[in-house]
View 1 (cartoon, one colour):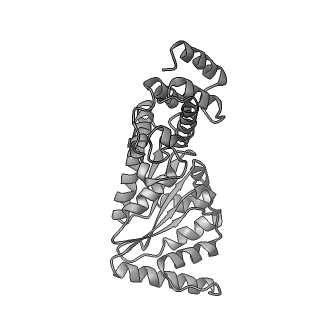
View 2: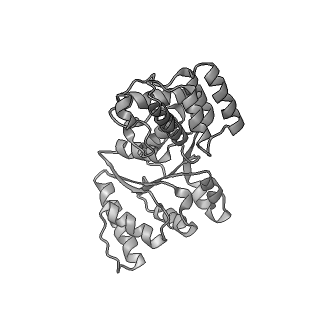
View 3: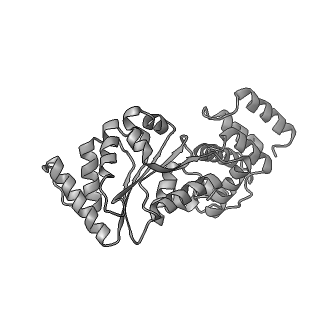
Length: 288
């Protein structure tokens, strides 16, 4: 499709989280560094909160790619599990003895023995939970009890929870106050600044083998306004703008194409009246 027209090796604005396109912007850099430092020091719970589309899943994948050598990791992309399913998942991921007929206390003992064995061999076990706001209350409590497993010097299981702001609401429940008290570090993923949006667009175009100046300065400015700095929304708008430019045979994306993408996307941060005004203005300005 348009990737050949614009001499791109691949599509730069896919919605699938791809570590190749990770941009180490300030908010994401701080969150990643916090997680890495906390895990190195064997802290208990770590919480990362961000709005929909701010890159939490991509951050999960970056973290997992950095945890090598003495780490054993387990990743839960969909945490809507019962307590029994959670324990079964952890047992299988860390290599503990498990079969579906195991009684709860026997399964817990199996997990504990495996965690002790891994600790004896210098391995740290990290459970990364994405979309943690969807985890049932009973499962969260079961997870807290699992983190009670420890040696005299350190926790045997560390947990990183990433979720939408609803996670904070969930953890504010009085019956979950014990878990909330165990959250040693927390970070909030912030949207990109206007300058950050421009850097993000250029970085992804460059990573895809294209011209990082494919979008005009005015187009980047309007993308920043329309997306509100949310990475997923930036991808949607940039993708639509490229399609529009390709359809018109253009070699560069101007403000007109971005305005059309915004007008076609209900989740944007700009009113339709503003977009219509900008479309008229861009025609007078030559679509720069």
